[in-house]
Length: 126
Image (cartoon, rainbow, N blue to C red; front, side):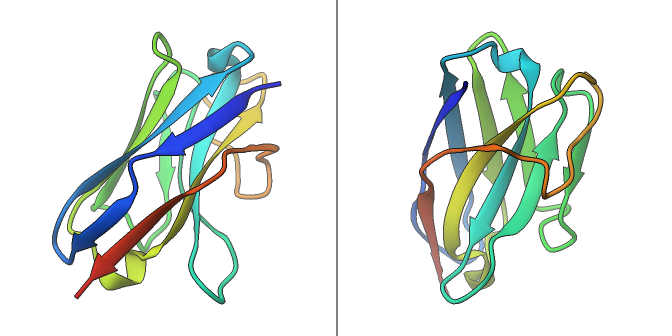
């Protein structure tokens, strides 16, 4: 199975940008659609963005659409989340996740991810 390690979190100010990265190992990375989730203190984990196996299709939560961009590099086994115009409400632990699926175009729904990384903290100050 795939192992995921997320990195890139930190403390930033509102309006700043931050890029998260998730490195995958242990299996064929291109076999997995990938996603980013986040969990704020006292809240449920929520879906942020997803990307298909070949990177052709993406899907975003309404709260981040237009500000965040998910991308992947199958040669490097990485998936990134570029976060622009950060807001204090973006503060959360961010997790990358993988979904092993057959379709190269499909972006899985929030409940379809089976493999998870350890999370990286993003804190946005006002």
